[in-house]
Amino acid sequence: MIGKTSFAQFVIEEQRRAPEATGDLSQLLHDVATAVKGIAAAVAHGAVAGHHGPAGTVNVQGEPQQQLDLLANDLFVRACEWGGHLAGMVSEEVEGVIPIPAAHPRGKYLLAFDPLDGSSNVDVNHPVGTIFSILRRPDGAGDATAADFLQPGIRQVCAGYALYGPSTVLVITLGKGVHGFTLDRELGHFVLSHPDLRIPPSAREFAINASNERFWEPPVKRYVEECLAGRAGPRQADYNMRWVASLVAELHRILIRGGVFLYPKDSKEPARAGRLRLLYEAAPVAFLVEQAGGAASTGREPLLHVVPSELHQRVPFIFGSREEVERLVRYHDEHARGADRPFHSPLFGARSLFSQG
Picture 1 (tube, one colour):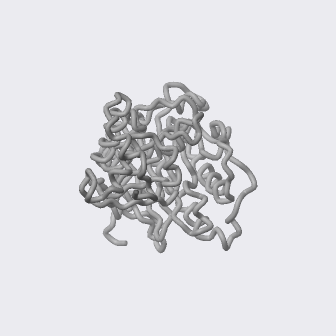
Picture 2 (spheres, rainbow, N blue to C red):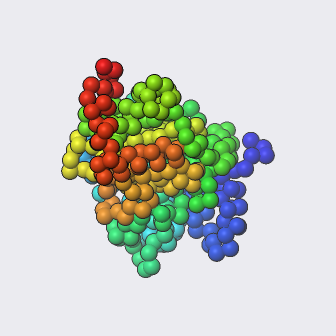
Picture 3 (tube, rainbow, N blue to C red):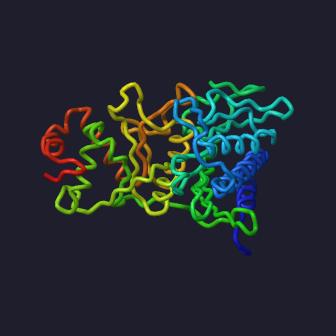
């Protein structure tokens, strides 16, 4: 694509705008892009190459792993471990810190990633993706420890994701807006296709796993019921509901046309605060969303302010168009103060997602 800005060119131009930059982050992002290309090829050829189906193992959260989960994890590690820019990595598929091999130098950055988000969708040919977060390592030298990664999302220096769909898209933020790049398969590199992505402040679309309705907290039930009531309800507008079971696919849709995503705290598994992992799912997504003008919250506090207590910590997560997220935060606050009592009977009695009584 002659005349289009390449990913490499974009990153170098951003580096030149930062006089203190050493080039380490630029080189690390080049390695990340290489990993994404490899995963894109593996996803596209998975069935032909025999990579589809379960691996017969489980990850640290006890979830069954797909063969492509393990392959994507290996591709990401191998692409990023050798460049001398990292002190360590963490992955959804590995329990502890992934060390940098002794043969390679250590760097000042930390990389956290979900190598293949939505991998349960692979066998039915639905969109999947990769999510990553880059942090600066706290002062010190040598190998990274788990404690080094336990930083709030507001400290990220870069976050991004790749979506493997009809085209492969790589979207990043360096803390100065959000930009998307599409893989030109003929030329073999990413080109700028979605500059300065902005989430509309309001939208008539929401994404939630409706099968968990009976476990939702009252503020979430209130919000969903109001959306379902359509023009006759308090929102005086019709809403669409989506659910792809792929965080990356949901995020990409919201970045392009707005809406809100909810994976809230519920009573399904009381011992877990939420479903999505903070370090390598919620935090990088929240950084991207806020840099695109949206908002991200647990329902009770800004997501980017949450300080991790462990590598694989889970959190409730609500993100998307700012006005919708702010409404949900207000509903949580009103419930905590007991100010939503008048809403309980009409919303949570006879009505549900599948009963309009």
